[in-house]
Length: 244
Image 1: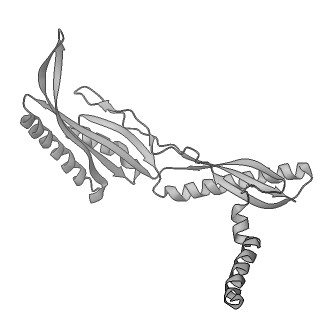
Image 2: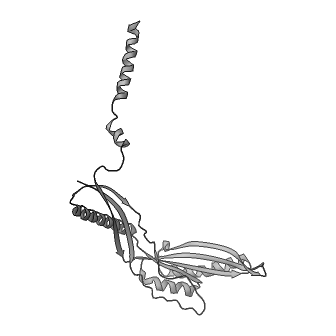
């Protein structure tokens, strides 16, 4: 009878021995705190890149009002067709003009607390992309003479924005590293390694507006000279370095 229980006792002893062994190195490292045990310093770095824009976006709108929605739509379609024909005749690429909004809605007057239907307004908005900044004023004039009723923001941007963002990020890391080395040198402790770098997500402005929306009237004059200026792209990082 004793011989039957020997294998079972041997198995139980093996389980107990395994339970008493220390955890593997990978499990131990996962259980340890993520914070370093060596002395550390934390610095922040900022990077700035300035680039001349190489693309412009122009918002152009046509509004038409009539007593019925059908008439407002028809009038709007006629004027916008003329505007787009003029743009196509200006040798712009096929994908340089796109519709960004369209709608027909009623407009009301309010008198003595009562709402009265005045008319219907049809709005059609397009965006024109220009890779030749010297043509911005030309396109604005062309659209207004063709019947556009309002010009929105003229915005300038970069075609390869990601390259500029990466350069700004590299500059931010270099700035943070230089600060860490300065602090470590002042403390008389050389840097052992870079423990962590975190991108802080510095606000990076989008396309920069250069002109407010303005309604075109019979006697209005469009300020066609437009200056782009430079675009600034910023990055910010936090760096933690371990000391020897």
